[in-house]
Length: 290
Image (cartoon, rainbow, N blue to C red):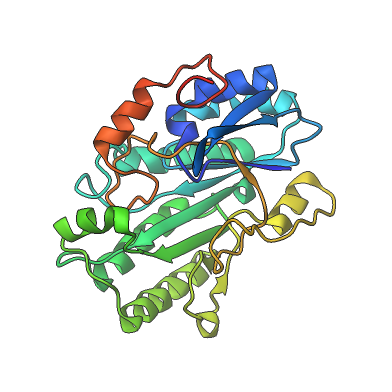
C-alpha cells in the first residue's frame, strides 16, 4: 500500500505532529470527500505500508521527525513544490530563500533521489511571462543542483473553484506556443544541471524536447527506494492524464492555509478556517470528530 500525504493538504508543513501521532497509534481515519458520512480506517502498520509519498511546500517541521520513520523502517519520499512566486500568488509560503535552504537540508538528510522538485503550476500574467519563468527556473535549478534528480512541471488549470482567484491576478490561459517555449527553455536548463524533466497530468506531447509524461506517485522510484520489484496499477481515481499509480490519500480538502490562488483543494479562506478550527492533534481524523 502507498500512502499519499497528501494531495489534499500540506501535512508536513501544518500537520506533522498529527501525522506522527497517527504513526504512533498505527492507523488513521479518512473521511470520503464525496460522502462525509463514510469514514475509512487505514492501517499505518510498517509491514503494510510500502511507501509514503509526502507532498509539501515547506517540510521544515517534518525533518527532525524523520528519525522516527526511519527507526520504524518506513520508506518515503517527498514531492517538494518550489516556485518563484511571491505573496500575491502564494501568500502563506515562507521566503523562497528559506525554502531553498530547507530543500537542501532535506536532500542532505535523505538523499537527492527521494526529493522530487515540483515547479508547479506554471502560470502567466501581465508581469509573469516566458522570460520570468526561464530566469527563475535557471536560478532555482542552479541552487538545487546536486540535491535532486528530477523536476516535474505542470501548466495551470483554470478549475472552477480557483478561476475567480486567478482572474483577479489577470492570469491568462496559456497558448501552445507559450507552453512549448517555456518547456524548451526548461529542457535546456535541465540538461545543463543534469536534471530529468517530466510533466504532470499534461495532454501536450513534449517528447521531442526530451520531456516525458511523469508519475508523481511513481512505482519505479518506489521500487528503487524499497530495493525490490514493486508493481501497482494506475490510479483510477485520478484524471485520465495522470500517470500516478494507486495510493491511499490520508488528507482532507479545505485544510491547507497556504492560500495559493491556483489551488484546487480549497474553496477559500473561510472554508479553510472552519476546517482548521476542527483539527485536533489527538484525533484520528485530520479535521473533525468521528
